[in-house]
Every structure is written in structure tokens, then in C-alpha cells.
Length: 115
Image 1: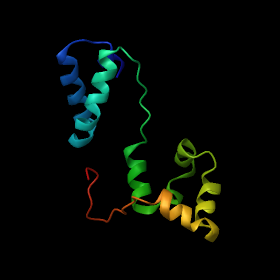
Image 2: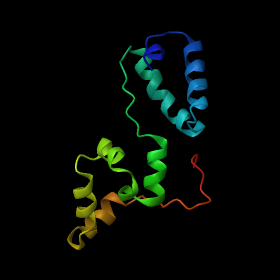
Image 3: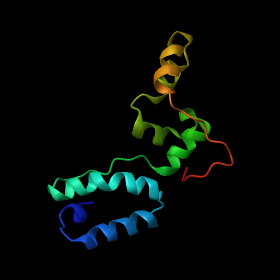
């Protein structure tokens, strides 16, 4: 990201797209993020790569946060055990369903990582 944002060459965008595709980033994600990256590049703004690991996202989508190993969970949620327990308490059901799970669609075994 640093070499892309500090460059003014069109070639930099092509190289970035190639690296993202090679890393397995879906084309739709690339298309959605390029305007943000271009804005940052045009203003020479520094960027941080802070996305979760793709395999962690798939594990959580398929099996739930509680099935992510403790080390990985701690990278995303400070008190993951407490958070999971809190969301499963009956008194927090409405919040969990209407806020945390509002747009959640579980993945099934036929889903691919690019969907």
C-alpha cells in the first residue's frame, strides 16, 4: 500500500490490482476499494492494512466466533469469551439479533470464499 500511495504512476494501480488478485482478493472487493485507494494516493495519505485474515472470516461465518482459536479471537475481540457469552444471554437477544446479526447470512458448505 505504501508504494502505491506514494506513486503517481498508473502502472502502480495495475501492479496493486495484480498483487491483490494473486493474494485471492475477490474482484468485486478490489473494484469497491480502488476509489478509496485512489483518493488516498492522490492526496499522498498513508494507509494501514487492518482487514481480518480471510480464513478467520470464513471460520466465523461458517462456525461462529466461538470456533475461532483463542489466539485468533484475541486479535479481534479483547474479551472474546465474555463477548460470546454476553451475546448469548437471553436478556441481550434483541440487541444481538437486531444489531450484531442484522445483515448476517450464514454460509453453507456450497458457498465459496469469493461470495
